[in-house]
Image 1 (tube, rainbow, N blue to C red):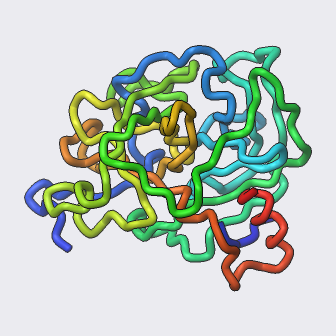
Image 2 (tube, rainbow, N blue to C red):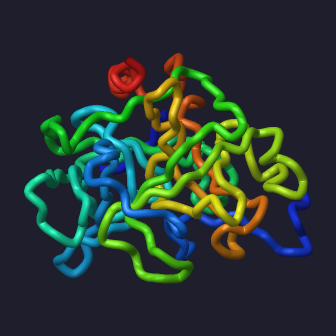
Length: 274
């Protein structure tokens, strides 16, 4: 069931366009293998094709029965794999749960990566078991804006080189935050970037994109919070200077429940915002 709810010239000489991450072949390039279960809220969103499931996007476990991901990730028949380090193996730490409902931001435009509101919630068929391998993500305070260069990590099952195959083990890459004033400069992303987004990376030494829908894990006062949902990057190549990975800013969607939310979703919104 699919339900809708909620949660300028730019380098013309380079012809740079924003593209959703799964349209790019670059994933966590320049990153390293994550310590097993260091990011226990990370999930693998998988689709069914010809009797088998395949990894397509990442996401974050925000409640025992709910996952947060990118709106552009959700189509087809889905399942969520939690507690995974190597997604090609049946690890004893893994939990596999079906997705029963999909809730997409009503303003999301599937034909325009830069329009914003690229966020969705997935209702799982049952609550997962929390343990050392599966834990809830910590979410930021409503409206919280991180300072420039705040340390963050993007995580996902990414390739080790541009255009290479996906990794079967979870990877991480260091991506410092680029504030809106920097990211919206005309020689960066310009007007493509909105204030409901957060940029991270943007240099040759900062890693690259992660799985669409996956978390941007940012350290604040010694603790990691999911401040972003991976949305889009440059159409040119991985690590394009001044073209950081762009995320949906989670703190922009936490706060007072909008009046246009379906009434049956009001309680869910309260759960997510506790």
